[in-house]
Image (cartoon, rainbow, N blue to C red; front, side):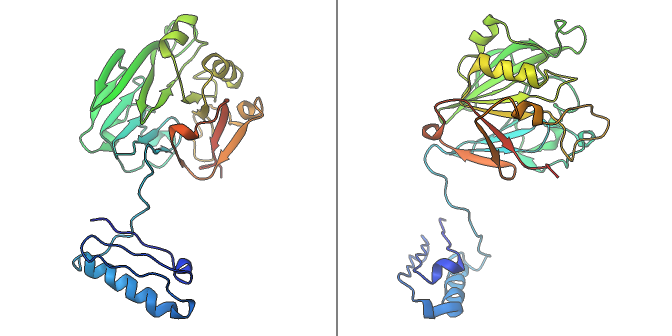
Length: 282
């Protein structure tokens, strides 16, 4: 079933409704048609759906379009143009953010701490990757895990951490988890190309704003998305700084409205931009 719906505003200028069941088309609706035409179109939709209740579908994705959602802290969901969903570092309620209802095909975890490994909160019977090292392909997605540490003491203070990289629709995503140190030249080579980089910036438990800016310089991503910083929803007992100190170090910044954006490989900027979600700002 493929159904497209237009807004009431667009009805005044011309509407095209299609349904594979009914093969209905309305074109060049006049402005005088007003509400009766809207009612007719909506009624036709219900009929075409077999009176089961029409779903107002969002527009189909463009070829190669990937959606990125941020649920707060370090929790992201990346959905391919074909609908395959990869969740990374899901948290539990102790982080302070509402625990979202997420369904995924794959869940990847950078390290075993409560604010990153709540895989039980992800539905869909996903394949789970816990601190994956090396290269592997899961459900058609090529992953690479690079060993790093949660601190500057080789893991002695906070333990190990894994940088997780994977490619979807030609866009290579890299999630730094709770990285606690600058990257070595070898680690930079192992990570390789990072089109979209998820990077912690809140300090204390991870690298701070200054070190994060240095790592952006090391990896040269097309888009760097800060994470693991204080917002209005962060639990009071988590000692994190805000994103402001990190953002102030860059001229090319963009505030992303809400908690999601969609992008294709062709739309990646040529130079590094910092994209900051404004969700949870208040």
